Amino acid sequence: MKVMNLERATLDTCIRESQSERVIITREGKPVALILGVEGLDKEQIEFGISDKFWKLIGQRRSQGTLSRAELEQRLNKGKSTNGRQPRKAKRA
Image 1 (tube, rainbow, N blue to C red):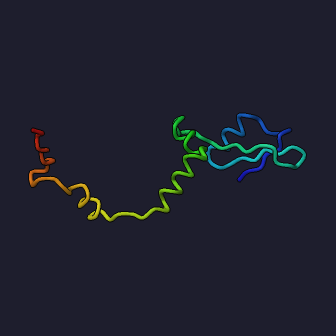
Image 2 (cartoon, helix red, strand yellow):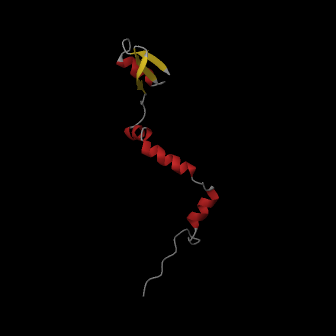
Image 3 (tube, rainbow, N blue to C red):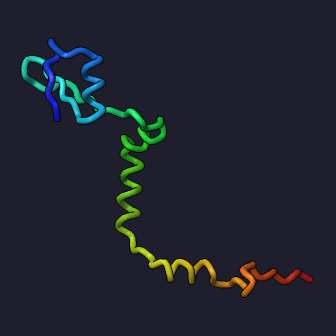
């Protein structure tokens, strides 16, 4: 993490430096801002990256049990006929 004094830092320097590491801006020796470089990311990636709701959902999903690939394939193939198609439902009379 790089620390830059507000009185000496230029916006161009802060942006350039923030692409490789976080930049803390200080005023009178105290932190007042944090600059994160986002070059190469699209708007959606940035929005998800700072979304508390998104990260809460990710945390919930990660705490759930997982399936092996074999278990997943078994669930997906359950009820399929041998030719890979879903069996037809019987017509109602």
